Image 1: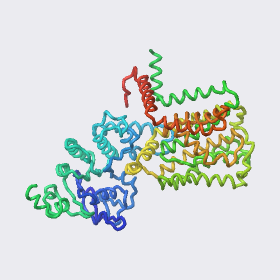
Image 2: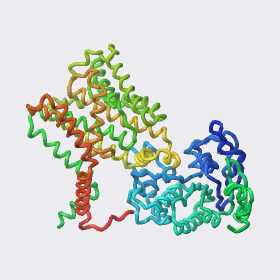
Image 3: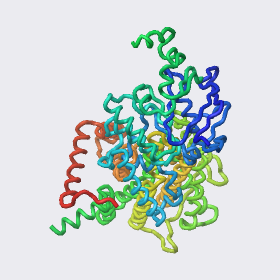
Image 4: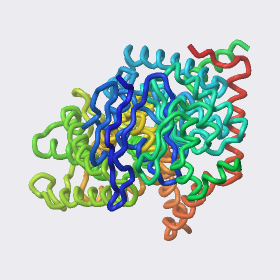
Length: 261
Length: 339
């Protein structure tokens, strides 16, 4: 059984069909990438896979379980978590607190026990903070534990956002343009980092514009254009697919590619 | 040297902010020994404003929602305890659970529409909610005695012991200030408090992390309303007379200035904000040549304080103070060992 199964997903905003009859699967232990020109509907797919948008039709199955009727909290509990295209950290909180928010649904005490000191609360908080140490090690931010999240440099903020998503122990991690705004060296590092994340999550859905990152780490690529899937396959296949080339470079682009330009 | 170690240890365990708070409370507690009854009355109302201010700061600074109608909860608390006395002869202690209950209900009722709106609608809804409650206070004559208000509300009685003197009342309010402060800090430093701050910073990201926005909004509104209601109940008993004119939007705006002057999310700041903004108008009243212009001076000072909070010299002094405290704390001790 596939990790994630998306069948005939469709959503329209007014008259604009943002995602049109999209179907794909994600396998365990793989990085699946979603690419396409601007406005192709990639982020909309992520928004539907995390419960922010309700699709007009179609279904999503996580480990064979239908996601229909879940609210956003359930999506997180069942194993979806995401990062954002434009970084969305909790700006007034420390790095540690940001991670703790990521794991909040796994800290097993509720709002009532929050109101006064008690043993359950203390134990849970201590254990959670111990776990934060591990996550910080993973993302390489041990030294910045008590820094304000927005005081970090850009690349670290990206990593912190990924760390925050990791903290919820997701099955499917959805990364929305993690390499945006990075320099070539940072991008190489990031590719390695994303690959290493597969030890912690079952599968990664990656949205990215940077072809070097995409081609070097993806196991499968899905190409969207105007909300519809135009191609799917391994990186090498996608590179040679005429429809993809047309979507990116326009008609006639193929001759340039063949000519090696 | 040994004393110094002990001092740094206390500071570290408490945190600088808490230390400032408790020192301030001790200083405030000995105030009645030195002042006359008029000044003490001002300090009483400052102390009530501290609880009121902290309740709004919980909502604004931690919950991230500006309430322009916080006087409504204050009024509900005041009227609950006053009506219980007026109609049934209940004293403060027996009415107290009802104060909590009714202000909680008032908070809950506002929270439900509030959790669905943002931005300017927040302002409109909170303002009009307070106006509606104010109209009820004014026109529900059978219960609230209408425009006549409720007169001669007795002193607070704690299990048979009547707080007849101003200093006793004052100390009792201070105890409640400390209790509120401690309870609010428990809340803020818990999972609930953290989640609320996350919602305040970025509600979309908070939702993506699986925080149930609706229930959290409801909880914070309710708790904030309860503290405001307690402050209102104290007001009713300390002043002995309430009518609907006390609980107008004017009171809400005063409360907002207390919070803003003290700093959002900074509860020690609220203490000083309440002190400052309660005592200042009274001081201005006593300066003869300013008497007619005192509200103008008050306004100018308020603007200056706000400017100072965000000005470069202000920021420099804050940074300086912070570094002095840090040096004080870390002089003998290496970095804190965490778990």
